[in-house]
Length: 295
Image 1 (cartoon, rainbow, N blue to C red):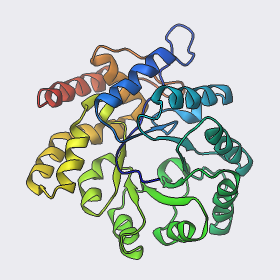
Image 2 (tube, rainbow, N blue to C red; image 1 turned 60 degrees about the vertical axis):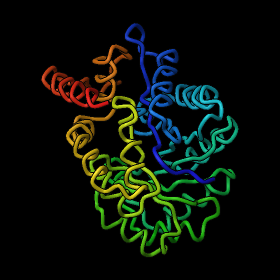
Image 3 (cartoon, rainbow, N blue to C red; image 1 turned 135 degrees about the vertical axis):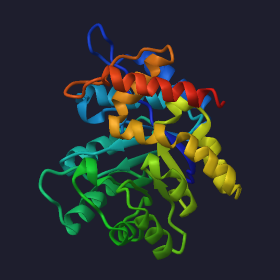
């Protein structure tokens, strides 16, 4: 599967009444991403609070997202599990419900070595024909995979075909591009590095930003790909403070606060995550007023 461009991340709304997943508001979140003209939708990542969902909730969110998107764009399902057996189970489920791709990050309590990681991905690949995006996110998962090792997996494990790099080190992206001769697609997972990553050859940008600032990430991606360097820099620096803010404030809390600011309350994050403080909420409100006045 050839995926590129902006991969939008929906948050998972929760009801203020009973704390359950609010599927009516999830539809609104997905519609917001469609309005932002994202090229794919990746459910159940960190922005979607996948780690805080029950097994049944996870399955229902995955299934609902696939059905609601209804093949309008590819759907990627995020998988980050402690055990290989649970990751395989979720990969099979993603295939059964009609997802187009899975994004797999190795989540670990013990520090896994490369042989353990290789076998983890290999087992998932053997369980389903779905394309696999290898996701390196050491800050969240506690495991940092080198470009060389991720490329080894792409070259030696069927179905592993692309990489999402979120270590925050732009040199990783240069190495992926250089070592693969530009043949292996990789995606930026660090919002505040979007301009550098796209200029380094990233095939796309995985982000929850379109939930709040519409087509502006898409405009930035298009400007870079069209070689409009001055325009790209201008677009990036317009967004930069906001992109940095939502990461440092916590994606789920920040994006949900932003929906509330823009007139669509979708509940807060699930504990132990907390909503933004009033000060941070007002900071975000100021940024969004400024950004949305530019569109």
